[in-house]
Image 1 (cartoon, rainbow, N blue to C red):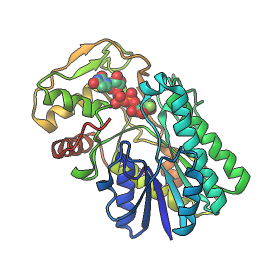
Image 2: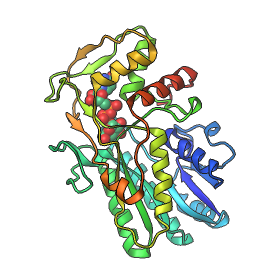
Image 3: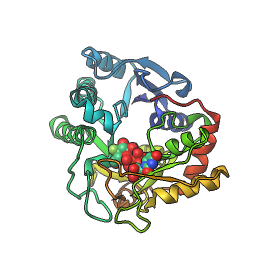
Image 4: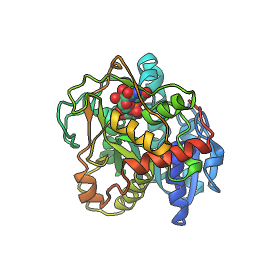
Length: 326
Ligand code: UFG
């Protein structure tokens, strides 16, 4: 019996793979290694495959059957908002075809437990202080659309062949569970600030005239180790027959501003973090903070780490490298 993790060589996937291994699970990773790294998966079997490929369904079905897989955690997907705006068709090909191949293979092999990596990007620009799972999803870019469509496909498969699924809507994931598992990409606030500091430049704040307490955007930062733990809680929950919900926010319920994060980076690094203020970046909601009540009530999960631990662990991993894998 084993768990299949698509995208298990990536930043978040590798944290989940390690947790599964620590609790004694047999793990099979499927990853095309386009952004993932083979050295992150420990002694898990690694099947090198792009899940969006034409042949992927057959390959996946064979792996599911041969390895007696009992549950699938599906991370493999593209996740850059800007890139999705430039290449919408490719995002749909990658994220939707990939998911459809995984779901079809599960149906064929009779595997019925699935965790899907969704995103707070499904909410778009909500005009509420705290978003609950019932806040109307209105994605504002192709990336967010592929996540919402993915949730719909999964709900359809739950009705069609008894798939048991949980879609986890991640808020702003950061930090590292250990120094060798840091986020190698420089695409989000914390690594972007580290990168500038390392070059001897000042951090940049994209807009300080938002309607927030200090004028900078507020987000719900979630430690990647807590997020990984949420996947295990969700996987266990899928074994119960009486399931109250299948979509969960994964956040802390607490917001931090861009300024808060940069100040925390100053404390962790000991460096001068005086920022430059730049123009607003297109498409940034002023505030995106999760209501985290459902996941606590239903899965019994809540975040254990706050912003200082997120930033400190990210800084340690940054110094350990390697990085700059887009
Ligand atoms: N920011 C700066 N300076 C920087 C980098 C970022 O001021 O150098 C600001 C951004 O403008 C934003 C905030 O920091 O206000 C957070 O930006 P990130 O790029 O780290 O994260 P986002 O909230 O924009 O995006 C995240 C995920 C996406 C997801 C989105 C919506 O990275 O995948 O949340 O949930 F789509």
